[in-house]
Length: 245
Image 1: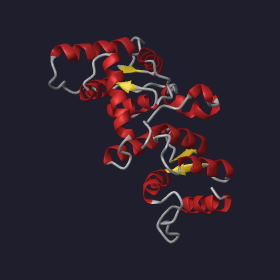
Image 2 (image 1 turned 135 degrees about the vertical axis):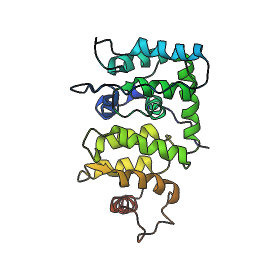
Image 3 (image 1 turned 60 degrees about the horizontal axis):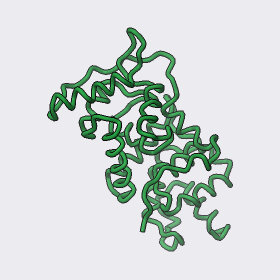
Image 4 (image 1 turned 180 degrees about the vertical axis):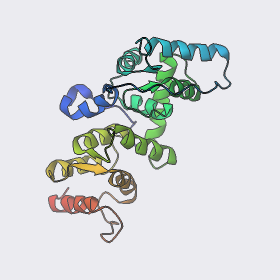
């Protein structure tokens, strides 16, 4: 059976490998843009909404006259309260559920809408909801919900103006968003390590790998070399067969 979708064991990994993910929530922008105006709160009770906004006020940037948003310092404080590493997949799940548009920042409106949808109003309830979502996603990696999260993780990890992710970020992201037992992941990373000419992934390669990992058998017995896979995946199959792995 498939193992639970667990965060990587960071102390056992070289920091340089995981640093690209840490940067998602620690990278400061040069000039903060104003936060989007908050949408009207929905049902759920004034008390719960007040608690959500108390959380926002705790973690938000305190610069006078600045935009209403939670920045890198507030996100690290939230991580501490939830006992999460900043590279934990659950923080990426939170960004997805908030509909976060910018690395390292949660706007006031993103926070209000997202926390209402998550039905969380404290660090404890938020941590519990993220744990539950993490388990759900791990158990249904072929589902539309997981595909949405998987696609979000690629787009959110890009810096402004980037169309591709650097290969080190790709490797760190793969072992973060996919369960540790997910087939092809470990061998693809070995292939990337052995192929320095591959310097990054575009979005088509990223999304195609998820489909490939579900459709193609571990022994490649049903792999069609004339299929419509990106050429990088053809090279991956050839590498595995040549290496006998």
